[in-house]
Length: 349
Image (tube, rainbow, N blue to C red; front, side):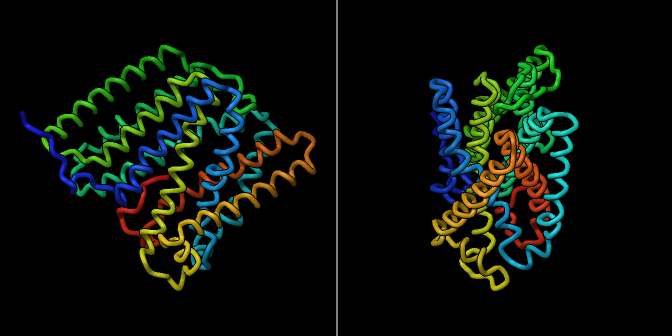
């Protein structure tokens, strides 16, 4: 019998096995385990949600600002995102809440975060594609169809369930007939079966891009678990949110580390120092402290002045989320101006 041997060059890690296995498998396992835990024991949801927000969610938003606030050059390039864009987003969110109702903000978040999570995952898949040095030979259009059909099935399935509340806020899902969601689901499963068969053939021919394939498996597993297998909208969202947050934190640190490597850049002294491998704990600690202070200030301010503290805090956090989505779309598309090596860059975040 012919043995299947995977050459080391065909693995094509983003950094190396220790980082990538945690980045791909470790995060996915933790995210799915979180969803299973809160499904089996709903009382755990607030506990795991608290840990997700304070250890990952808020931190992942703050990680974005390590790209635009830690040196004069970056601030000069992205000053609009820091000074003007927050005002625009605040005005937009307040206008939506006042004219349409709180449901409109929650509904926008439901669909925008789905798109944002999907795009970040696609960007990372593309980073693994480039790292494979030509081993990933899928037609780009076919690849995108296969890649996005699973998330599309997920959000249509969730919409067809017609949820009325999302994270304790009223929500109005898009009117999707269950038959439409099921039809897209059938197409998604067929595409997944085709992809698995293709992967098996590549493995048999010893041409399997291992790291890229493992990431694709995690992508499919997360979206199917979070949107299809877990019925409750909040518990399913938790799976996606844990995965996305942890993934973003690790990838941004990898990006910064690959950008500066082992040197201190005089023009980006603070960020380049924090991005050294030996300073990873310091980098995480600084982000966590900044996160805690920033979000605690927001929460305490809102509690002190708002009549409906919970709703107002949620709206404030959604302002930060929406601002983060726009900033991500801008900074990752202008990444080449920062001089990062191509293997370290996502196409979209």
